[in-house]
Amino acid sequence: MNSVPEVEDEIRQIRQDVVECRKCELWKTRKNPVVGNGALDAKIMLIGEAPGYHEDVQGIPFVGKAGKLLDELLQSIDMEREEVYIANILKCRPPNNRNPFDSEIKACTPYLDKQIMAIKPMVIGTLGNFASSYVLEKFGFKAETIGKIHGKIFHIKNLFFESKIIPLYHPAAAVYNPNMKTVLTGDFKTIGSYVSKKT
Image (cartoon, rainbow, N blue to C red):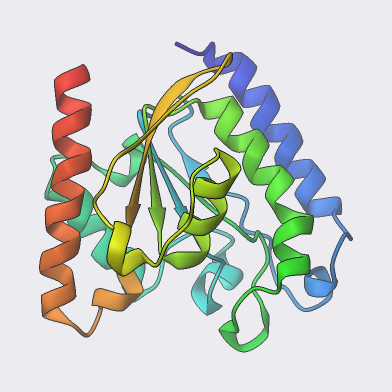
């Protein structure tokens, strides 16, 4: 288990580095960087794609409609948002919510890498294709479309920590699609059952 004061220091430094970051052009159009938030000793870390309009305004991940659905999904496995840690591939909103450019992902993901290593979650839930592709490839897995790999469990273990990656559809896909919400609820149960077995 991590020492929370140590993690606080690491996360504080990451936040400061993101605020000062000029590695890509997104800092010029953002209102607020969205570094991440949640429990520093979280068993579950959720990783999304990039901030949207509401996240950019508030500086907090998943606060729009997709965020409300994410809260419901967490509650379906008896967890609250405050118990998990939530971050994104990109820390700044792309204009008009366009897809991230490869160059932006390359520039920004070192911050995410540091967050993962600071939190050392038991389960990493990747939300959508961009997050799933990046995290899976980072840990040596072949990335496939989210339709093929959602809900599957990928075991990772290295010198620093051991975890499971579980790719998930992005909650935004289920905001207007009840069928997708059913799929997401089922996949979240996979996360919930794994965490509950280990606690």
